[in-house]
Image (cartoon, rainbow, N blue to C red; front, side):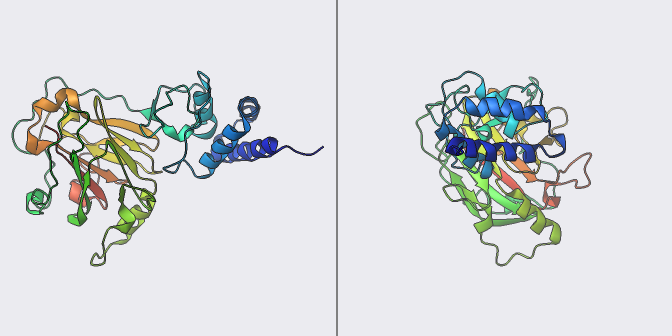
Length: 317
């Protein structure tokens, strides 16, 4: 009996599902995977196979089906095999507009969410909020060469720049500012479409230490920065953690704002619009580092001690 094309595709996906689970592999999941794959069409099985092979690389298609909960099964089998019951997931905005949270089977279009509520007593209306650093970043030229900042949060149709992205290695800014006009921007290595490709940033004059070079390689698929109704979300698509500092997530001592760790596969609302009016315009900045944390509890005390980090300068009024 000849093997059908669909059965061949299913066999490959089952193999990938087993290898992705590594030491946590549960043999009973094979039965679940077989039932799941037989219940969807050949086209959808092929799309899922390509997505898993590419590990959710940007540009992978939506996998649309008419179902209610199949996306949870896909995420459990090929993204988070440790979960017996999938927690609440957030769909990334790059998912096709015709999809909703119950229709797309692409497991890489979903992220776990970090629960964080900003303090209701926070008031940031003086100088920019930042950890003490080794030198004053205001002399770096960041505020001089920023793009137009006419974006208004109440006008969803505006196409003006709402964010400027600066890439740093320790206390040295590398490359020019990247102006963000679209609601979502990818920041990663080896981007084949629009976004900030860190691997192509001019760096001929930079002398990197071993740690910085290694962290740069680990950035991989990087992050997505997304302007959404309730705030600015960060989606960690890489295989390393990122560490985030934002004025709307800080409580207590304003001179030592909290740094939040975001694990791979997690999404975080890094700038809450509910507290936007309490933050002065000069303080509307998100800082995040790749792989290495900083501040209290970390060996690196200051953001400029981090090998690779980003500064998101917001132009939202």
